[in-house]
Amino acid sequence: MTLSKLLFSIKSQLRATGEREVPSKLIGSLVMDELKKLDKVAYIRFASVYRSFEDVREFGEEIAKLQD
Image (tube, rainbow, N blue to C red; front, side, top):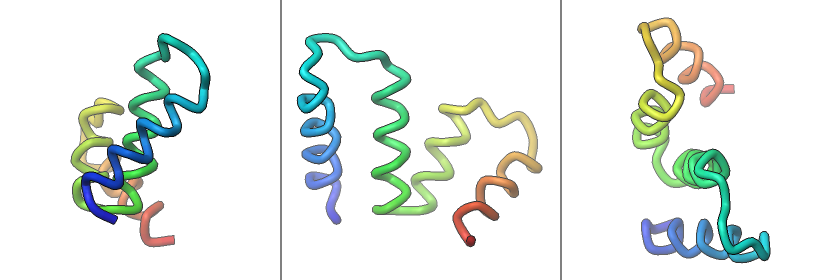
């Protein structure tokens, strides 16, 4: 998957809602789902900001989830 395909997928999913406005929480969730498929490091970096990680433990927990 390329970045272009990631963006296309997110936009398609947003259009499929049929809503004119969507919550930012939905957008963030879609971005995280797609990044997880594309680039696990980018996913962790995005998740750390999006979910406001406060310590190393939270990074470790998220990395462990990816390894399962």
